[in-house]
Length: 268
Image (cartoon, rainbow, N blue to C red):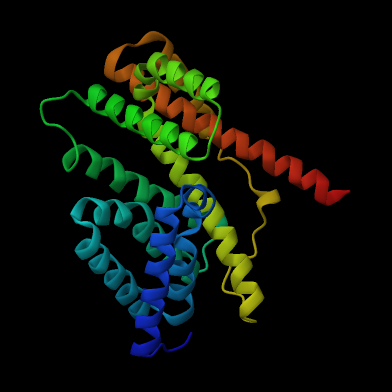
């Protein structure tokens, strides 16, 4: 699609890192703009080609590794770099929007879960205890963010009470929360990248399939039925698998309902 000089590539890296650190330092911006971090990465990858995209992604990862340490760099790699790289490749192959979103979310979520288990896990803790620890950490971050934004102490107390009661139950569904968060991130970034592309470039790289015409595959109903039965009848590991599959199936049907709603709105 185009060529990017070394000077401009370095400038893009610097600008992106400045943007990233500003987002990290300001809690309000991290909530609003953090989900959009893959957009410039995906755009540059698609606009200037695979070689330029991979070089930029590698440079950003190396700089973050040096500045923030291995854990933060690896988390950034799994959550954003992988998602941006896979999404850019699926867009370049002109796949439909659902495949672009699904493949990028799937690769990013799977790698995130694997790295959480094998890199960041406490070897002495059980799998459920590890997930509960992650849930508690997310609640702690949310509470600290609310305190920074000046929320009322009563609301913070309610959240703290909820966190103490619900963390154990939510831990079983933690993998599906990772997958759902990654899916939403991929969805937002796909449409944000498409919007930006169509405002800048006259050549449309994106598949013309519409969200309003999307249909859930017929096989998903069996996943919904089977996971519901496993969740209700089984305990421990099987029950955890059941609730995660059930939540993902429900999310699929939620988006199906959203697609139908948009279809009727477009038809009016």
